Amino acid sequence: MRIALLSYSTRPRGGVVHTLALAEALAAAGQHVTVWTLGRGGDSGFFRPVAPAVRLCVVPFPDIPGEGVGPRVLRSIAVLRRAFAPEAASYDVVHAQDCISANAAGRCVRTVHHVDHFTTPELAACHERAIVTPYAHVCVSEAVAAELAAGWGITAAVIPNGVAYERFASADPVATGMWRRRLGSYVLTVGGIEPRKGSLDLLEAYALLREARPDVRLVIAGGETLFDYRDYRARWEARAAELGVEPAVLGPVSDADLPPLVTGAGAFAFPSVKEGFGLAAMEALAAGVPLVVRDLPVLREVFGSAARFAATPGALAAELAHALGHTDPGRRAAGRELAARHTWTAAAERHIALYETLGP
Image 1: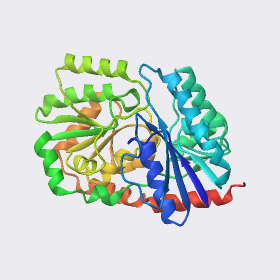
Image 2 (image 1 turned 45 degrees about the vertical axis):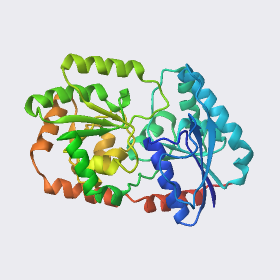
Image 3 (image 1 turned 120 degrees about the horizontal axis):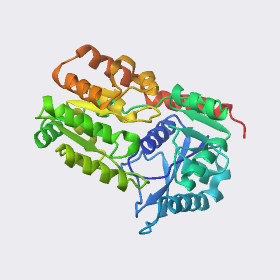
Image 4 (image 1 turned 135 degrees about the vertical axis):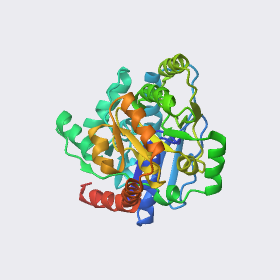
């Protein structure tokens, strides 16, 4: 089949990581795959090398200083649509991975990674159209599929994420040691400082954790996003000053540096208030790192006994302290086994089976 996978960015976010890994697995299975995306801020390629079997179409999308979120969303849709529309009919399957690309794609399959609730009018409308317009839907967990069924009466195929298990299970020990020497003992979270990631709750938990473990640092990696979280970031920084804590904010980390950074952590914190699967947390399990997540139904579904769960900052601090102070070989082995079962090969096979059921 000729398959187009559409994304909104070349930069490392969960949906983009998913798109590239799925594209490579589909190509390895013999499919003809093209990834379409916007090249923001002068990007001409993705954040990491992509297998040569996958064709890439990166549509230039220059920054406009001072552009608001709403206008940027509308321009993103228009630019990607204008580039993709002349080619759309040449594909057997058009599969959008986010609301922007779904609005740009026209008739498409849509993966709903999680259901959001936006206040920006243009983004709220984009999100709604990207759910109701596609003719077929994929969700990465049963919990998200249940949200689509309850909210829109949509039946979605459930195909969990894969994980690059070997990359995280076999991280370079020299590079891991370099991170540990640089950062000391640390709790890691990946995803940046933003409301959906529960960053303020994690900050409160870190302040409590330091009362028992003053030697431990909170390290925050990632954070590349289309949206403007400057107000939230300002509140977060003000609260950090009030609490007297100074987390290490690394920003986006290179693809090569990420596995040893994860492996070097004493624990991985994942206090998101909204998730569809939790790919970064699954990567931590692959690395053998103790995982503490917010107590959400979707994360119970995905991680089960491999993670520790916390509903409040106080509970999060307590669980992180426990993870840092106690070895738990059984839980660690369960986490690695769980991560190893989530292969991109299996995800690709299930996507192909779904595509074959769809009419022209």
